[in-house]
Image (cartoon, rainbow, N blue to C red; front, top):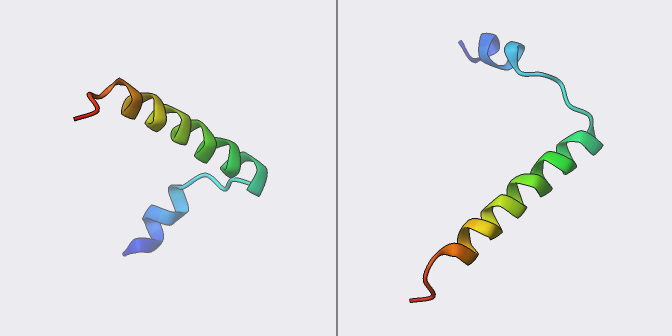
Length: 38
């Protein structure tokens, strides 16, 4: 059942994956910094 799902997933090399993770992390940090400190 899960085979179809993983088959559609694009295969990323390690460098690409790292960049994606860092990008998401940056957006997450920006999001957190915009929230009130309380």
